Image (cartoon, rainbow, N blue to C red; front, side):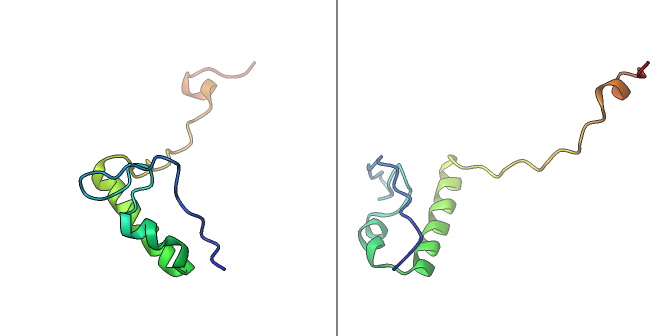
Length: 80
């Protein structure tokens, strides 16, 4: 039994490119989901991520910022 869950969020509307506005799977991918093994499901999810980025609804996470210096040191004060 497959363990990769469906990405469906209940917003089931196909756009002009035949991709769901909720999960970004194609109509064919949605229809075949139940018969796919985990490897194929992961491949579908990779495709959805690419589609979401292309549509501008998914962005790369910003790089972590360097830890800021303690406030007192940043303001030039010292503990008394």
